Image (tube, rainbow, N blue to C red; front, top):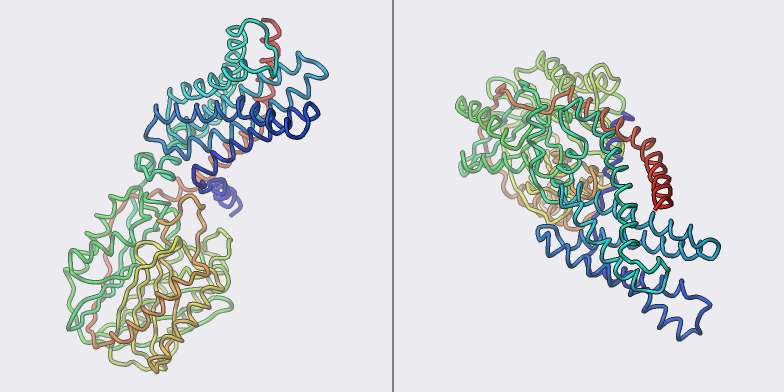
Length: 591
């Protein structure tokens, strides 16, 4: 899984930006420090602070803030925080350039000028690249890079920092020529890195990055059009375990799609969208679980949810609630274990959940899940495999057909189904709670407590992208503590949906971790579910349906392409930058 880990690791470069005022203060401080640094030894302490600070603010801070203001006026849709953050990056380069240039000027004034030309050109390219790829601008990105350079040149040439001659127009021209050289260099770089993506998928890498950034930062869905073009149709099942009580209905739904890739794209919000649709269509509550599915089965667009709901409709049209009994079974093979809720309403249906906690419990390949289901159905009429996805250790992996983990899961299921635990009449209690937490999606916490022997079983489903092993243990302990207050002993089982809805700027690994709000709501939900226990009737069904997903071939190809682009970029970038510097020196020297 090394390629996938490397590709996933790229998302670590996305960070949440602090408030705009911090960047403004940082730019002011940077100007003060630059001015003091440039004037060391020229003045006594008081004059150094006053005159030095003024010079630094004049050549660095004022043009930066004026540039940011002008750009914001011209591009209102981009948050000021992003503009000022980009400006801060540029100011760091300007500060280094001015400091280095002044140091070099003491040895060779001509070389110092080259330092100024190259540094300003580098900031020009930083601005162009960020505006093009992150602000998702095209020709305007060149304009904004030009604007910020013009403001800085006005103040630099108005100062006495460096003598560029008596003709300011000539000096300005040289700065823009140097920037144009770097612009041509970055254009060549884009051509090089665009080639692999365009050849494999018909999209340039720069367009893909821009669409990716637009979604990541602004929840724009344009990138779904690319997913639609490269996606493929597959046929997968959705399974439904439905419960009817005197006062309500509740559906446990297991659609064989992956709830990704991230944000609001594809199936990332399906856990909540499916629940909302079930509530509207049937007036029922629901719990949406993680089936055996990897990123291969990410729906190509959020509109594909209609196909999932149509399949659930087909299941429910055949619904005939019956009196049922329930039994709980456990099996283990090495580190793998299976916990099974078996229902008997004239036929036997098994809700087969799997985990390796505290070892990493990640996605199960669809093919492996189908095999496990088929093997389990040698013992029961319907077996639905559910990934508990409840131990996130930071390892990016999946469990494939033929793997040792897959075999251990098979033997754990066989071990569980070979046991004969007592059936008891079906009684169940439900509850749900929303949680304000960056690690919990909109579907919140949902709990179903089943009467069973030797103790009731609490199915605890959290709408999250996994859970750390340590926090899983704490949640189970807290759930048992909440039940003890009702003089009840329970067997808690922690599930997460693996929703990628919460995967945003923080990166792609956002498991549940220590959070008092989650613990508080979980304990309240357990208590509510216990109080809610009442007799229920049961129905189970499965429906196969077609849906467009990213696809196995495309998933592998995307990861491989991204890694090839990164590998090429690592070699091409320094060569192109060095070539640009040489070209700038050669061209400016000839003017």
